[in-house]
Every structure is written in structure tokens, then in C-alpha cells.
Length: 396
Image (cartoon, rainbow, N blue to C red; front, side):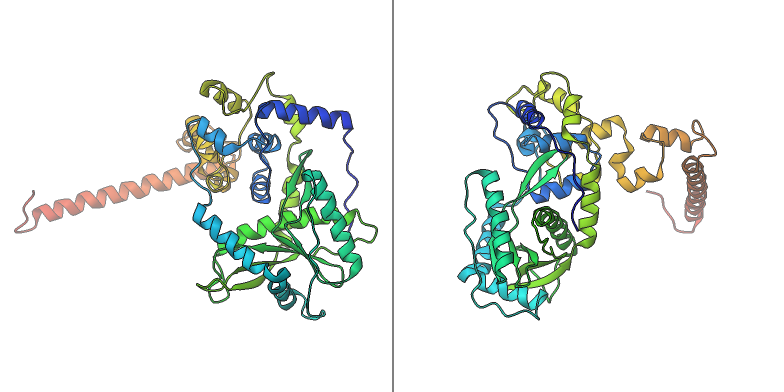
């Protein structure tokens, strides 16, 4: 199904936006590419304008967090990075013969078995050139009707009015012309199953690639099918042998697409920033803090595993007493009560509309807690008295 036509941005405005984002990043600071993992995290928190403008401008959030005095505490170790690269090289060896065999076995057993798949050259100058070369290779492979492996193709996806270039591990074109995203991960698959949290993260990442492929497919004359079942390739048990599992990402794709559509356009956020705002890590800490705090953030505990600025945002969220620091689900239950002070005041009956369901629930919970603590205190006192009166008891 083709995507609806989007409003075209005039070239002059696009040029102006790129210049504005370069000024925000810092004239001498190279842009940080927005990968699918960051894009999935951004889509999971569409209300965070801070992350949207920083990612859109290509700001290195890890360097920014260190300059602010709240360095990021997560990331892939060098050992894990090298192990992942070695495993991926093994999976793609011999022209991707093993990878194509796994795709055939898990996703398309009825097709002609792959013998010698094509591996087109995707090299080109610059991200725009690589994106165009990938689109051409996909079209040629679809028309050829043979097994084709695209190794690290480059795809483009519009994110809040700014292009994001994404590089999946591989895309396989089937003999029937359909396309499949392949995710290669270094975490093990034990007895046919892997860690659910890691599989979920891989599925969200693959869903971003599926969305980007659908944009490419929509521009072709005969729109090919982009399969919503991706192939997850992992080491088998405790060996370095590859095994694979089919993962349906339709739910993740729908959620990601809806969340990306909700993102505030980057130029709208940039227009609201004070003149001269810059996020260069070379600036003094005070100036950098002022620049970062000029953009609203929506912090939640989930940010700790997805955003380099999470510690900085958490400190400020706690200082402001925002209920989002306790979790999105709790925030949704509290309605118009946006600070912890408001929540406690409503629970004590000092403020709040009694007809508000959230206020009524808080007051009921406070009443039950007081009753429970009162009974427990009484029982403890009674127990201590009985113990003190017992024969042979001595008090230390």
C-alpha cells in the first residue's frame, strides 16, 4: 500500500533548516548519525522535544552528557563490539550462503533453494549517494527474480522533517520480489529462544528498517512486498554457529509509525529556541546547561536504558518533583496532578477536586494506608508489652 503524499518542503526552507541545525550542533562539530536504535528510542518517547531536536541536529548526546557532568553509563563494550563483528562476518561469509539458507529455511521454504545469491556493490559517495545506490540495487534485484543479499544497505527515513539515514545489517530480496530485513545479534539463542528483552529491542529496531524499506518500495512502479516478518540471527547456544528465528514485527511497526507521526517537527522546535542557542560540548558548562534546559524534556525511567542524557534529565525531573520520574503508567493514572507535591497534597485532602477520580483514589489509598499502619503499630506495641511481661525475658 502506498503512503499518502506528504507536503513537500521548499528547497530554500530545507537549506535554512540544515544551516540552523548546524548552528545548534556547533559550526566545527560533525553531525552524529541517527541510527535505528536511537530512532526506536525516540519513537518510544515522542513527547520529548529535547531528544527530537538533539537527534535531528546530529548532536553527540554522549559527549553532551559528559560536558554537563552527567556522563552516560550505558553502551556496548569493545569486547562485545568485536565479538558482534566477528559473528556477523561469519554469517555473511561465502557470499552470504549461510544467511540465505537461513532465510529460505525460516521464511520462504517453498521458494527455489538459494545456490549462489547475488551480492551487489552498494558503495557510493556520501549518504545520499549510498541511499540512491541501495534503491537502485533493490529495484534491479526485484526485477531479476533471484536470491539477492544487500550487505549493509543505506535507507532514508523522514523523522520530524529531517532525514535519518539507517543501515540494517542486511536486506534479502526473494525470488518472488519480496524484501526481508535481517538483524544479526551477538546474544545467544539457547534451546531455540533468546532473552525476551533483547529480542523485543531487536524487533523495534527492525521495525524502523521495515518502515524505511516501505518508503523505498512505494516509489517503485510495481510496489514490491516488504515482509513484516524479519529474520533474527544469533549464535546457537554457547557456540559461534549461527541460528535464526522468524520475528513478526507488525505490532512494533505500527507503534513506531504512529509515534513518529506524532513527533513535533524539528523546525517548529528550533523556531522556539532563543537566538544563539548552541549545544556544542566545548561551551562552558553553565552556558551548555542553559541551552539544554531551554528545550522541554519528558523524562521517564525507561530513558535510562535508551538515552545518554537520562541522568541529567532525571536529576532535573526529581528537583522539579515531576511525577514522570516515577514512570509513564503512574503519570497516566494521575491525570492533572503533574508534581509529587500536588499528589501528596491531594492525598492529604488539602487540595484537589473530590470528584476527580485520581484525587478520590489517592485519598482512599491514604486512608487505607493510615489504617494499616495504625493497626500494625498497635499490634507491635502490644507484642512488645507481652514480650516484656514474659517470664525470663530481659531487655538489652
